[in-house]
Length: 273
Ligand code: ARG
Image 1 (tube, rainbow, N blue to C red):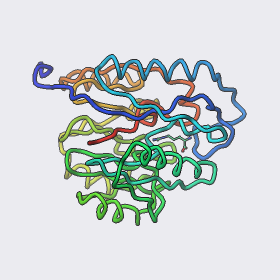
Image 2 (cartoon, rainbow, N blue to C red):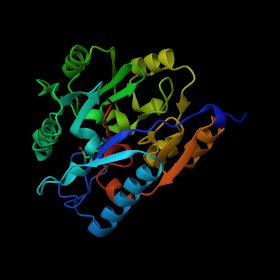
Image 3 (cartoon, rainbow, N blue to C red):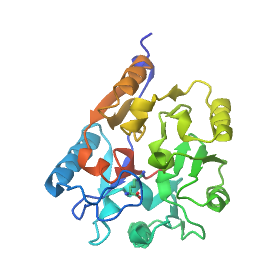
């Protein structure tokens, strides 16, 4: 069935951070091997291609200046969670990234955002908070403190559903689950506890399920505008499944950033008005 005519892209406002100080100098997830060399020029080139892809698709990309000494700042998704113009700041689990929270929050304040909350509990922004329509899915298990889920629900006034991750290679929710539209998601069931898997089945019985192969190449670290789905090009099975559901999968190569355990979605923070 061809459903492509029934799907429409809606233009988004995105925040990104160029990887000008990118490197893998420490290891806080199993993807990061500091002894492996990184190519700074290639990282920047791959990131610029992603940014250009977004603007070519009609999205607006805002840019935050990277700070020296915080090489993971390129992963803008972790910098905050923005829903209905309200900004929940990020508070990082690891000391290597703590400076990023206030840096992102300052950006929002300077941009004139008024409802900005410096959180009480640890949360890593859109790495663990994914908005699906008027609901929020919230990861925990590795980074975000489950107490943050109640804080987010109270702040946004939207229902927050907690999901527990179990596989250290999928340490953030956005490495195991991607939002495709206001009602659809794709995910890798094995990354979750049995209870969380059952919750996802209950909420999204028709979800796209990723294979172990596609999950292992970070295929779920994807961004969708409702029609175009940008995701790692290596996730061939997901490309096929998305196409058969009327989406337009767009393959992206972010091999350098993958050395830090990040890809398309990690680089992209959505600024929801
Ligand atoms: N090296 C970073 C970390 O482990 C990668 C963050 C990836 N971001 C994401 N949204 N999953 O914190």
